[in-house]
Amino acid sequence: MSTYVFRAIDLGGVKARGELDADSKQAVSDQLKQRGLIVLDIANKYRSSELNIQLFAHVKAKDMAVASRQLSTMINSGMSILRALHVLEEQTQSKLLKQTVAAVRRDVEAGLLFSDALVSPLFVAMTQAGETGGVLEDALMRVADQLEKDASLRRQIRSAMVYPTLVVIFAVGVMMALVAFLVPVFIGVFKQFGGELPSITKVSVSMSHAVTGYWWLMFLLA
Image (cartoon, rainbow, N blue to C red):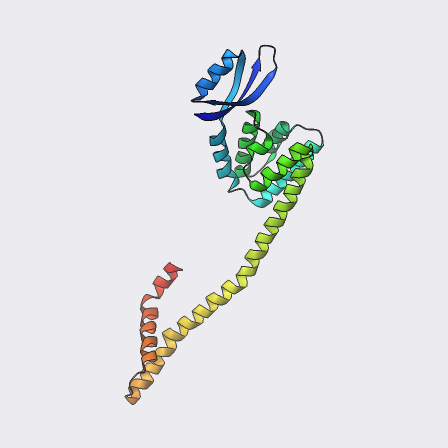
């Protein structure tokens, strides 16, 4: 048995939304018809949420921040959350964000609260508080602020990692050059004087042969 969200109207034109536990959409439809309701939409509550999770996971934080600000502005101007989602879906340029907004909009149309249609922990916590307090537009603005801070922090972390990475790559390159070109020179000197190679030098020779013989494999592994 699954939980379904539905949207319907009665013969007088009064809208009805809610949830029902049933074995199938048809079973939900039959129950609603028995109540004298005309079915407009039925959706599996949890499958819809799983889809939203997959979409949310790939949307950029900066795109979500912009969307949150736009929603906040529209709601603050008196627009309903459903109408605001419609407008945002039409105006957004990001294909992935458009799909995400569309999925949330469909859930809201089916009867879910806006916060229930979301899956990001930050979004859920903030919008639930906003819906409860009647200040959803303020909650969305705070979400946008936090998302922008998160995006900025990630950019700083990536920038900070660039220099150490370059240093490591340079150091490895220098070591490979020494092993590949300098060690053979020492081998020639030892052979010229008929000396026995020390154990550590033998290890270096083996490394030199590996580097010069399989240098291409190192690039593949990298």
